[in-house]
Image (cartoon, rainbow, N blue to C red; front, side):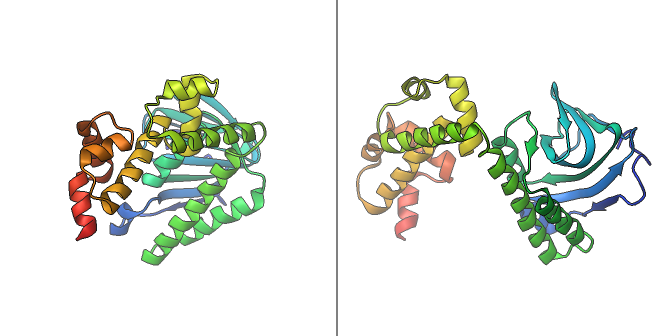
Length: 281
């Protein structure tokens, strides 16, 4: 950590985990984590670190600067960001007590893309959140296979807490309801010739806002949600009927067979006819 040496108290905790064969198969893999009592001059500056970083303030204040964003982390708030971009973070004024975790894996990327980009999160029940964090730190001391699996489960619980509280607070309850109405509209009309612009116009919001908030809440952009809905329906038709691929494509909202086959293969790893064959074998 550039500039951070010996700038936290001796009672700070810093645990590391060496990668094992199972690590690459986990949705969450914690490489380093800790509980720091940082001194006022504590500061970390990096060009890149191949992970995502979770910071959570217990006492005092800290800051994060990354990708033209500057976040102030007050007591009870945290921030999750992509360390693969230049970044810095450190104490503000009197010092900073905080928990931190470097994490990799598909789950980390999913939660990063789902959470509000560029905004701090607030946890209502700080005590249980910290207890969850401490459980992960304890497990990291003796990382056998079982403990790595348990750490992954606890890490998932930690991020679920962040996501659930971030996506269901204050004025955002109305946005959540709107996005779920839009998802329901797509579910009911996926067979038709609808576009993201059509959806935005129908619900009287901008395309940019629709795409950003839909991805934040549903985990993927509205167009991808629409295509996935069509593919899901096509899979049932392939498995349960003998309809030709071309007819299924049109019935499920695709304009032609070629586009349907390409979309199906990119999402399932196989062609429609092979899927039908494998399902019935």
